[in-house]
Amino acid sequence: MTSYRFETTTDPGAFLARAGDHLAQEPVLATVVASSAHGALGDDGPGPQHPQWWVSVLADGTDGEEVVGVAMRTAPFVPHPMWVHLMPDDAALALARDLHARGEDVTAANGALPSVAVFMDELARLRDRAAYVHEHLRLFELHSLVEPRPVRGRARPAGPEDLDLVTRWAAAFSVDADEQAGREPEPGEHLDAAWTTSRIERGLLWVWEVDGRPVHFSARSPESFGVVRLGPVYTPREQRGHGWASALVAHLSREVLDEGARPTLFTDQANPVSNRIYQALGYEALADTANLRLTTPAPA
Image (cartoon, rainbow, N blue to C red):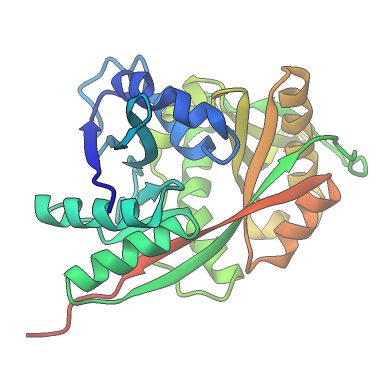
């Protein structure tokens, strides 16, 4: 059996130096990990108050040690789920055992199938718990934009004057997404003011404005290995059905294409509305991912 070694770092630059070539091989599939690391480069502050680390999975190859998988834990919201990228099944098993032995308090993970399921099933076995799928997601890529019908309003970058509003919307995003998909909303899982502030400062958060009033927001990631990911995409309940989401996603998608980058996004497979909207714009399904959780321990 192949033996694996794990290099864990809180330094995104060190991680990219080690795993960048591996990420660049399939840059669309690796968009979440790559954009997280690139987005954290140059942060000069004291660091986040939540776990933030990346891990390279190494195995012996023909030219010495080579990266065969990556994972990370950088999510700013409770329960701070990991992201597990594609890797051999036995590597995912070994990663779960390594994290368990280190005492990491991981109880949730998102990522590529089947790797994330193998990882979480093994972590559940080690802890005498069970893993279950909280959310099925699908990764899409756009090659050619299909223009949506014109709607009132305009796109503009969110500014400091929008901070309070879009922070409330960002916090509502996960709750509304769960409700729309018929799931029980999970407490604590939401984006906060620090996330919103950072995106506004970096020009990565946009609003659709009608008659001088924001009615929708969408975010985008920084470009990473030629790929940009759109999301979250959120319209408050009272503004839905007017085409604001299609208009702003189309605007950002067009912008990304004009930059020479590849637009991507994730959809919740349980939400037929969002899947229909993005496919109407020309987005094509590429891969399925999942968000898994561990059951809570049984009472003693």
